[in-house]
Image 1 (cartoon, rainbow, N blue to C red):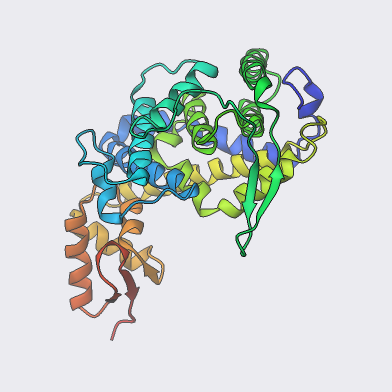
Image 2: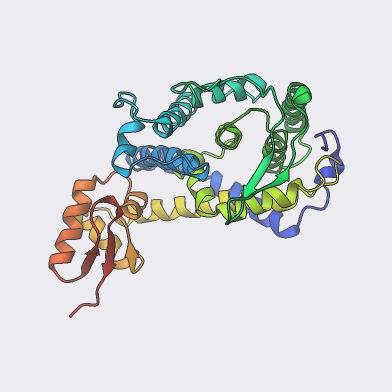
Length: 352
């Protein structure tokens, strides 16, 4: 493990990564303008992002719930939780809600990480909010179900010291501007996952810490576009770059850049998505919400799409309005549908 005091760790940054960092910083500078001009749009985006983040970060770890339960489980007044998956899902919803609600986010430390962990498992019988008391391993299950150890974290006895040192080094590196803040954040998350400080939930805590730090560092796009959803959609690359960057981590000879490039590219994609949604909202002035749905279908939708794709593109439009617009297009011969419910696939038809 290389500490943040080893500044050579940040040498040799790929040139194209510097270009991407600059684009991200320019995009982040426009956020305040949008907050002043389009507050209603951003409120809708924030609510949709919260739901997407809970669903995606949970699904990465195999925690999935029925589609018709998702919206209800992220509410403060939720129904009775039926099983372990719903309890963990509700825990992540509570953790995200607390994070988004905080007006002033504190610098990260071990206490914060364990508080997030406690939130995750508050509805279960798991021992949330504590460091591991036995060694754990990062494993991969192949097609035949065989377990393959791909990384062995440090012994449990040294976890607390490593974690305290990690957060202290990160805060000092930010203060001294050792590298770009997003590069430092990538290094923090990589080391956190390598230490694997808890018995379960390490990936979800790492993603909560990522969102926490993006917001604290001024990258507010994490409030309006789900970073977790983009990680879920590219989870093969997520795991691959983590594994590549953790090779020879124990010998302090690992390569930070594959993982760093992945994380910052996800953020760059989120900003592009954010800008597109803002542009779409601006160009929809004067249209009813139903007309906005129909225009999105006509001009922006892929040949096949689902209800959730429209939710993401047009935050603040109710499911009922979306269905009215889709059914009108279906009766007009512009769409056909396969399946029913939230999983139905809508398919564009050629006019005539």
